[in-house]
Image 1 (cartoon, helix red, strand yellow):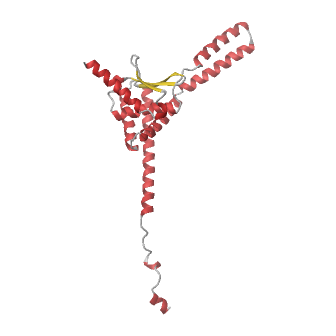
Image 2 (tube, rainbow, N blue to C red; image 1 turned 180 degrees about the horizontal axis):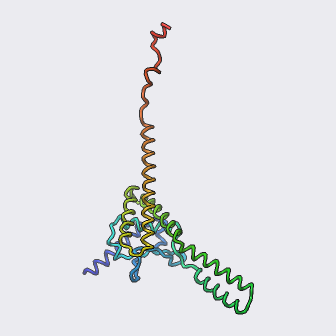
Length: 236
């Protein structure tokens, strides 16, 4: 009975998350439970030419509050919309072919083919470096966080609640992540989120002050600037 109830709760959570997808993504983005051993909490992969899957470790997922889950889920949605999810690339295969070709051409001493093989190695190696560059990974994650806030407001969240929910989710991930490199990324994302929240708060305060000034009634001019009375005008 307990297993059945747990399985039903997991299915309900996956269905609930599916409803959090923007309408334009619902036809080709799947939400599934991860089946790996010790998987990440949540990740997104391209599983076909026109199909993307968001995989969730439901055992860890249920320990988060609903608002934290929603914002982390929308972070992945934002990555899909920003086109920054990992794809099954050609780089590794091209690198292997290039290295094999370079070795072969050294043996037969064909200079042109050797140059082509080395060029293939260089291009594929550069593409792999781009994919795994920590600065680019962090930049993409911060941009996805900002877009996740926007998506949350589309689903009825206030800006303040969206920022607080994502911030608390990142704090939880920092506390639960043993990997130093991954924890550092979460910490940098949290700092960027705080800066963004402070910037938005300042903008709102400036707008509020401007509106207050515009609605304030005009004060009467000082006595020294008031027009002289008709009696004094006659004496002049």
